[in-house]
Length: 402
Image (cartoon, rainbow, N blue to C red; front, top):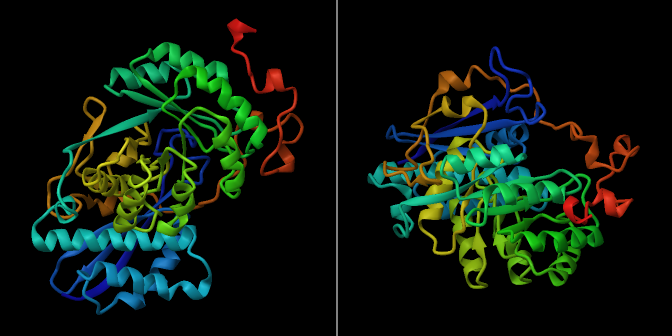
């Protein structure tokens, strides 16, 4: 079997006729990139690349010359060939990681189809046949809706300062039997002192984890936060490959690693990350906040085969097009997704639907919420900043305690 061609499918995730421009659009920046690797035996594989999809598409097309004529079943050898082919461009980052991921994902899809087996069965078999998922809630009402759908965990995400009162309200709404998480990512990112101050208040709310409390570039700052708090930490969605996640694990900076299923480097890389994390008694909860449905299928295959999973992130109440561009549709039942049983990944593209949403842009504007920045500094576009008026700005005391 030989690779004959690689096709890419880039689409804009956003409004449909009759819906507002804001619906599912990530401020107009969200794109999905799928690809198809074809072979001379008529078997093809599907993959998805994230990170910076419009740019990753060019990377995939550039790497096509390395793959044409190769046997797609030699997955590891081809991965390293691609990895070495890009070394002249510098360290592998978002773009390279996204390209490697989608290509390797499609190679696994081909191999599974060729052997008539789901990918998870080629990775050692199942620990489990369903994968627990968590959803996103920015209001107590949304949290209540997720719980009514069977979810047992919800995450509250912030851009900038964390609203302790909101987190507390959601905790009170869902009760003690539901897990709550907080994602504190910027911009603007908090300083170490502010992240610690917020974390000490969050400790009182019994979180499952506190995610990305500080900017990812400075792991020494994350170490400072780690040392100061008695709360589980999570991070790692922005890195690619085993070498990118290595310091988080070897320095025991987190309790949960969160590789992105579309840019981590591929299915094999995610399993290697999980194995390294296992040796440090760290769990894995893959990032999926901006991903499309193909990467979600891949995550299920990985998570079915490793012992130290926590749960999978899922944007349950999302843009409706998610459920139209692939088949079959994944549906959560009782807070979990079923592991696919069809050969390969078990998912196919609906190309005529993808064509309805041509890409127009793939860069985000500043956060819509100016409250993510200190008053009067929004236009400065700073990457991080300390919070002033600490008592009111950081809301370090819940309203009823103030």
